[in-house]
Amino acid sequence: MNSMPRSVIPSRSTSTSSREAPATRRAGRPKTGKPNPIDEHVGRRVRIRRTLLGMSQEKLGEAIGLTFQQVQKYERGANRIGASRLFDLSRVLDVPVSFFFDDMPEEVADARVDDDDVGALEDSSSCGFQPDPMAKRETLELVRAYYKIGDPTVRKRLFELTKAMGKIDAEAAGSEA
Image 1 (spheres, rainbow, N blue to C red):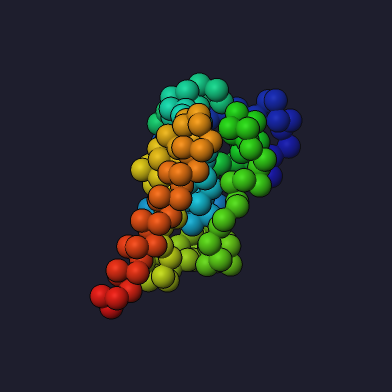
Image 2 (image 1 turned 135 degrees about the horizontal axis):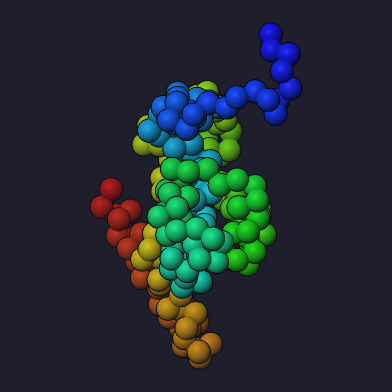
């Protein structure tokens, strides 16, 4: 159709291309409002590791050249983490890339992943998926505090006490049922 060399073809004005940009953006991943379950899992793993290290979202963002808002979006699964960014995160958080995929629930791992069908996995409450207790801030803070206990004997006693209390609660709940 056009025999002019590329360098001679006039470019569109900035105002025209900016008006047309929204129609062509993100053609491969429709905006459904629901994050991909795998992106959510990877984001949770980023958050777990960052919190275990006692690192703020701001510090992590600085380390990889992002704002803390972008880190928040990654951790929620709202934005996908590309391969190079995942590699950067693995280096900053001092874990192998595989860490971000560890402990993935079977229903998430087996879900069809298709950019044209981001909501391929059913709502997490309807498929029996329970949130990972290790992703809770309380759990992460407890683990960090536990490992700050310098005396291994005290740490072991606290561990045994916690297990015993959990067992008592589980037995009490079983007898009520």
